[in-house]
Length: 450
Image 1 (cartoon, helix red, strand yellow):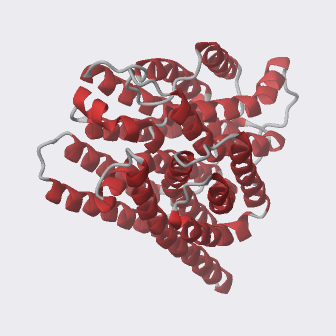
Image 2 (cartoon, rainbow, N blue to C red; image 1 turned 30 degrees about the horizontal axis):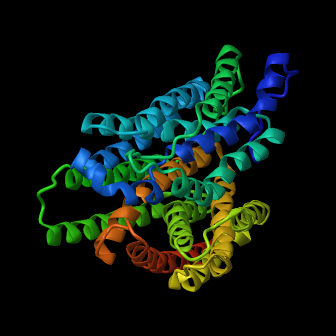
């Protein structure tokens, strides 16, 4: 890590804060994964959810807007306040959001749940990664790794849990963990937040210049994407033919905007990190979830050995991506593209699925870890990378549902429609991963020639 923290002798409270930073970052990121509305949660219950509130998609877009807005505000104020306040906000929001998202009975409850979950995701992910900005160098690496790991391994685990915990008589937005588990987890997060606010933790103040355009453009892209999703989702009477065209237009505008943001990022290393983080966040979770959904509907259901191999693949990828981040930023997208091509058949048997999803998980983990590591070139670059993580994971969940419906013809509510949607998303992932790898390689080549 290139910047240094305060080197004076720490107090006992400061030592406790540092020791707890890594487990708290892991738990905060894990709770954020539970709060993220995903294909596995929403697609099977889309009809009852739509009957409860026909503006479901609009409220999902509002949740994405809430996550991004909280992340931007927290990243701006964190230089003075630290990660404590936003983590406390995220912990409180997650408790209320998960409770509201369980057994939805009316449209008002659904709307409040979507907004509260969005706030929780934005606050928890921003706080978990932002902790690294106020920690000495020896604590930053494990804290950032603890932030990344749940984002990778959470996709198959939450999908498996969702497939087995659903109640036929209950309409849910997300899986709801037991209160006996959620209460101590959120309590520990709040405890760390309180300790951090009570003591004067060191902050990273030195900022490189030249980031204004990148921030303004990226925030503009996120605002435009969120507003477009809300406008389309809050108008249920739009003709389906027009709606499919509008969805494709919105996706094209978002991707074009992100390409422009890449040109505005002043650091070549941070730009490469932004590219692979965005690729991993937008494509990784939805593809893994659909692979598990289709495989679990086969003759043999997905069990713990299969999940263990997927988790192991993700962990290996995270470790490799963090260790060899420059190489992984170019290689991981290519492996992701190859794995997406191999998984395109969407097998309905567990072990063939592992043969395709295992390398996909490894490449997914390597891309996300390498992207975050590349963004540690400066505090400002790390803040920008954290916003990319929040935005891509939140926006990717909504866009994956919309693209599956637009290009596959229906929402992934059954095995056949999930297979069709999975093939669409895997095909798009293949194309995006090849483009991301080409960008990273050409950017590195251009930098070396200067």
